[in-house]
Each structure stands twice: as structure tokens, then as C-alpha cells.
Length: 274
Image (cartoon, rainbow, N blue to C red; front, side, top):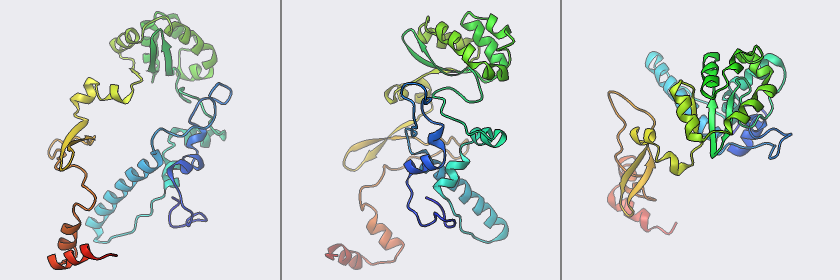
């Protein structure tokens, strides 16, 4: 949870509490002045996952160093360290201003419009990342005059005048169907997408085309489903050889190959009451 040094080194730590301590929950969730406001954890254990990802990078870096110097080293990874590091632009929002960012719901602290909009039959995400995309967006929704308005023509001005701009966009987006807006925005290169449930995710043609679901043979279940690796190598593609093992499936193999135990010794261990 906290690494090998510092005053918290001996404390236990779990993802949920680290999301709180490391600042993520202070910027996740609806604004406090709106219904449903308050701190919110992420839907998956992101502190755990990011620590694993950072650890992978650290291991690879240490292996590279070993190939150069011939020396090994310890890698000290902490959930809290990784949670703080992954706050990315929010870290700099604080460090450059001295003001702690607050929860903003589905809006973006540094980009406008970059949020969820309600269409007439559902919701969609519009992610305008620059001024040319904003001009295209305004044209696609039939409000080209907004991109010429000096209050909204540049992103810094849109952030400054968010409260004036967003209600105009909300009103307009509510008049069209979700898929109409998605098609219109895709046609002009504006990033936009639906909010899918997991069943919809695994029916998405892009997810299917990228092979993100696998079925692997299993000794008792026939086959089991798995999320595929996102790593796509041109020369050595990821291989899917076997499903996750049954409890103790490889115990005898490990005892024999790694510890050098004989069949008789393994059998004696298996029959031991302790």
C-alpha cells in the first residue's frame, strides 16, 4: 500500500482507501452542488491496476539496466505513489495554480465541450479537443455562430465561459437522436461515442474486429471466456495456450520441476494431514 519507507510503511492498504487518500475521489463524481454530488470511487480498482502497470515498466527498466551493468536491484512500488502519479493533468492543475481541482461530474477541467450530452433517446459523449474540432462540432449541430463568438472561439475562452456555452449545447443536443448526432460528428471528425454497457461493448464491431474476447478450452467447463490482451505485436503475437488453471492443477509439476521432489515425496505430501 505505502512502500518500504515513510511513516505509513507498515500500514495495510487497499485500492478503495488509496483512491481516497491519493486524491482520485476528490475529482471523481458529480459536483457537490448538484444532485448525486459527492466523492466517488472508480468502477474498477484503478490504483491496483496502475500499480501493476507501473511495476511492469519498472521491471522492464531494471532488466534493461541489468543487461548494461550486470547488476540487479529491488523495485519498491506503492499503491499511494502510483495513485498520486496517475493524476496527470490534475496534478499540474493544482501545482500551477495552488487551487485543488474539484469534482466536475462528466465534464473536463481543461477542455470544453468535453462531456456527456443527453440526446432525445439516450446519451453520448462529445470530446472536443481543439478549436478546429469545435468549429466542426458547431457546424454539425447547426449552431455555427457559436464558434465565431469570441466568448467561445478558443478553448481558454470556452473554459472561462463554460456556464454560458454548455446550456446552449445541452438544449440543442436534446433535439436530436443519439445515433444521428454520432453519425453527424463522425462525418466531420469530431470525437464522439455512445456509453455502452458491457454486453454492448462485446457486440461492438471494433471490439470484435480486434479480437478482445477469447474462448479457451477448460478441463471441466468445456470452454471459458476471457478478455484478450490489448498488446498487438507484429512479429510475435500474443498466444493463448490455456485457460486459468484449476486449484492445484500444477502443484505436482511445480514440486517436481522447481523443488526436485520425487513422485513418492509428492505423494507423501498429498497424503499428509497437515
